[in-house]
Image (tube, rainbow, N blue to C red; front, side, top):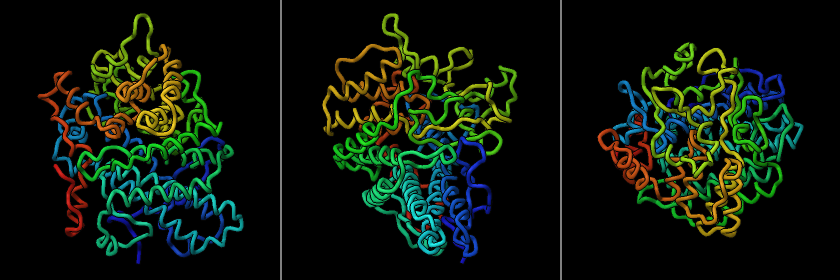
Length: 498
């Protein structure tokens, strides 16, 4: 029987698994990977494992539209009924929103591809005479499955656990699992990956999962699951595993593999990709695997104002994606000191609105707005330092002085003076300034139990009560896509509040 997942057929595309230049991992998917005749040589496995990375191409969409757009960093103003309206406005009627449906499907597509290749490795892996390579492939796949499931549990809470390729009839028998059980799978996969993955790759394989990426993700997973429950089946389960989070962050910090870039702007330079601060990113190359995310939160009219075709826009007409007064105030200079992240992250010169510009360099634009040759950074070293500080403040291994030291490294690079004390709130504001426009803010607030109070305080302070509904505990999760509810034959119930 032809195997599919959640009624999504995979388009069969066979391509070279690694591009010829020495830069990046080409994530073109290889589908129908369970086809018996496909796995006949080592290159077939190389293609299939590389194809399991393909769904990462859609991760920036999830991070920016479901993360940044949901936060108190953006006050978007629509010119009509746009897909992101209800996300930004905390609507309870967003079950059919494309971004939400895509997030569910993209992550489960990724899981399906991973499971298919794992099954093939189990059944036909003897074709691979290089046993160390075969072992590494398992590590990459375990990391990817953990990554995809972590996104799902953050966005939807309870989801079905699937560890083998399944048919349509089989999936209708698999209910949503408890969040704790999903975390058990994630942690198990990451621990296996950590025991297998190399610390680095040569140039031809840059972009693959590394030991550092697996340790970093494990720390983030433990930090997230330790957060409050909000009385829903969400990503926080009060696990109180801050020591475990701290341990895995230490593995990254003490590895000596990563370091902060001297200049904040260099992190996002088109000519400095895969730099010492990058732990894991989604690879891109103009012409073959370009990125769309630099155009997402930028008004279409901005490109026209520069004399550039509106094909570089996001397709949302005259909509604007204003940076909130609340965030801009957070960047206010102290005396004569200016936070250099402020004017690098935010465009203040376009008269119509302010917006995030940190990913834009028009000198490197591709053929259109979906063809930017810039990687999307998923995990970077500054994030690990600040999450390590966060785990310490929550009672994890380490001292307050150590936490302050990590935060002050970040502040010094931004041109700011050192802090002498640190709280969760001040740490979250530092993270907000550092990672503005990177899709982290919403989950940061959730993790520390401040999502509802902070969002509602911002709505009131910026005078947006007539435009944006107040957040509630139910807002922590997105709804299960309406199409999945309809086709589950009563197996799935909707998340509360939707």
